[in-house]
Length: 300
Ligand SMILES: Nc1ncnc2c1ncn2[C@@H]1O[C@H](COP(=O)(O)OP(=O)(O)O)[C@@H](O)[C@H]1O
Ligand SMILES: [Mg+2]
Image (cartoon, rainbow, N blue to C red; front, side, top):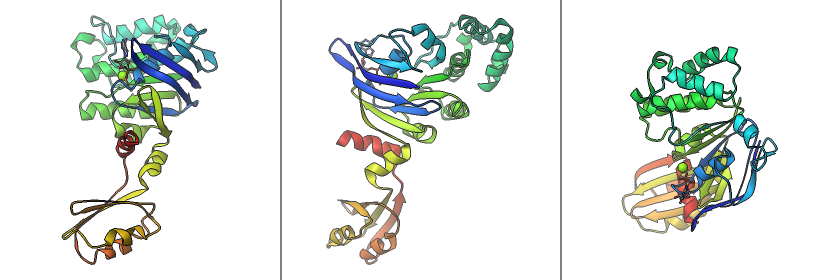
């Protein structure tokens, strides 16, 4: 649905995108995660035909950003990092304004706006002006605005940044409801958000993809499927060799009195614990998180 091909963009000496390639399938929810300045917003702005690349192309449903800006813009609903909403407008009027701008048929505008206000839980604030809204309420209006022309593609740039946990949870639920029906790109800092919502995740750094896959694949590729953490009373002895002898053990790290053991499966856990012969203070198991993957991909 969206094919990003060899995209490069520099701002002066800063290479924001460095030969970026990325494919987003129809109906997929793709997450783009990466540190500040990785190039996420730049890639999105180019895809939305707001910014021109130095080289490369983006094909949206087969149409090039160099040729079909108007058609592409009409297919995409975009929630920018800082949605620029007209402060003096009432929420309902703002949505009508954009509905007209995007060519929603006149007879459908009112019902469409009712539906959207309901979706983002803003029906009770429809007659209030944007400048009286908190960041969370603005974000909801921004999402409704992105949806107003019922686009096939939605692009959300850091939609929950700076929101309180309850509001962030609400926004994630809106996105979850849209899943499947729309093709969605979600840029986020929050690893657990990417993990719970996305079909696939791309890790971007310095304008390049460092890793890509389903959250599950990314997690199991990097650190094994399970991490066993054992704290002992008296470190020492030759337990590491014995632990490494188990076929399910991928890696053992020792720090102070703590052993961190990456495992492919839980089959040998009991036997591994027995190696310590009771010299144990605590045992923990943990599945790797996307955050582990993220941090790991910067170590390589
Ligand atoms: N309009 C601009 N002018 C100058 N530098 C920019 C501009 N937009 C982005 N950059 C630079 O490009 C790099 C990538 O930025 P951006 O795409 O916003 O990253 P992200 O969204 O991943 O934080 C950063 O170093 C940023 O400072
Ligand atoms: Mg950004």
